[in-house]
Image 1: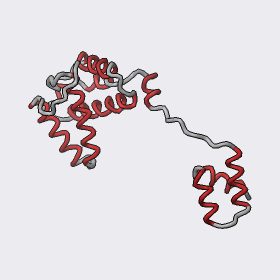
Image 2 (image 1 turned 180 degrees about the vertical axis):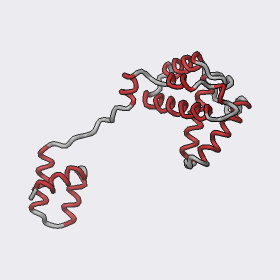
Image 3 (image 1 turned 135 degrees about the horizontal axis):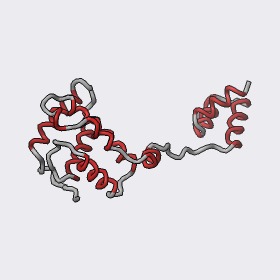
Image 4 (image 1 turned 90 degrees about the vertical axis):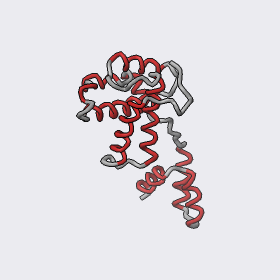
Amino acid sequence: MKVHNNKDICNPQNERIKHKYRMYLMGPKRLDKKTWTKIMEHIRHYEELNDFAPLLPLTTDKIHNYVGNICAQNLSLSYIDQNMKILRDFFEWITHQKQYANSVDYNILPYFSLTNNQRKMARAPKYQESYEIEDIFQLHKASVTYKGKKELETKSSELSQNHYIFIQDYSG
C-alpha cells in the first residue's frame, strides 16, 4: 500500500464519521486541539494505508492488512503501538453510536494490537544515564563543606535532583 501525500483525497462517508468523533473528543472528552489533531492524524494514516476505503464495516481482514502494512513501513514500535490504541478507541466509540453499531463487532477490536514482544519493546523505558559514585560523593562533600548557596546550586545542577535528595537523606 502506498501512502498518499495529497491532503485533498478523502472519503466523504469517512469524513462524516471523523467529524462526529472530533466533536466527541473536543466536547465530552475535553481534549485540547493539539491532542485531538494528533488523534485525527493517526486515523488519517489508517485511511491512507487502506486507500481511503470506507471505514465501515470493519472486518478482521481489514485489521490484519492494516497491521501488516503499518509494521512493514519501518516505523517505530512506540508509534505503531500508540496508533493501534487510538484506532481501538476510535472504533470502540463507533460501536456506541446507534447508526454505526452494527458495522463494527466489538470483539474484533483487540486485533488492533502488536505481539506481546513488540508491545514490550514499544513501551520499554529509554536509557537513563546513571552517575558515578565519585560524582555523588563529590556533591556530598560540597554540601558538607558548604561555602555558599551559589556553589552548591551549581554543583547540584550537574546531578539529578533524585541523587541530591538521596545524599541529603543519608548525610545526617
